[in-house]
Image 1 (cartoon, one colour):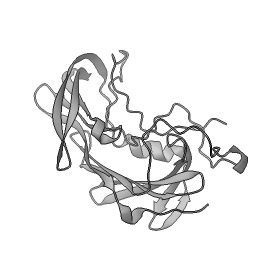
Image 2 (spheres, rainbow, N blue to C red):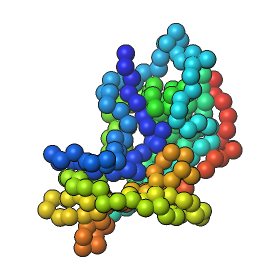
Image 3 (cartoon, one colour):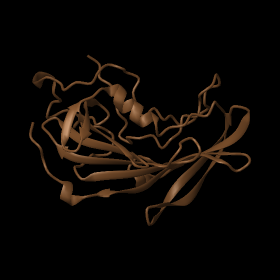
Length: 236
């Protein structure tokens, strides 16, 4: 069976820039799951498991201990949100990745198992409460990601791009800033997306600002790193 895909960027810092009838010209996509398939994820049978000598994925290598923290603000949500992605273990054919979304006093955590050879491939989704796992669905993961996204009604055109420098945590890195003219209802706004090779294939940030200076949506990669204390191998 065909299985759904997950972007190795995990969460979308890129905003869906085409919500109306007009396709986005070279606009960034922010499908949270990175997938067109809607089949339920499942652990592959032993004979379906990725071969040891299979070609490695072209995506950046995932390692136990990797973590990413993203911050979401703007009028699109009642309160700011923080999403933490952490690679917590390596099992026989999978990496175990926790996604924790915090908003005010509320927090939700999902645990994904993704193909070790192709981390875009979701094998299983679980809900995590304390240390207890319970079965969940791909739809639950997609719903969690959807809370962090905002879709303008229409993307009118790309305004241009420029090379600049941005902050990634406390570090200044080279980046590229690309802007688009979008519409939100009858209002004109600017969508800005910042990318950098220093971010392991992820986006540094994205935002939607109306012409009168109101912040509708902002997503920022505020921290990334590797926690050696998380390193370990879980057998399955």
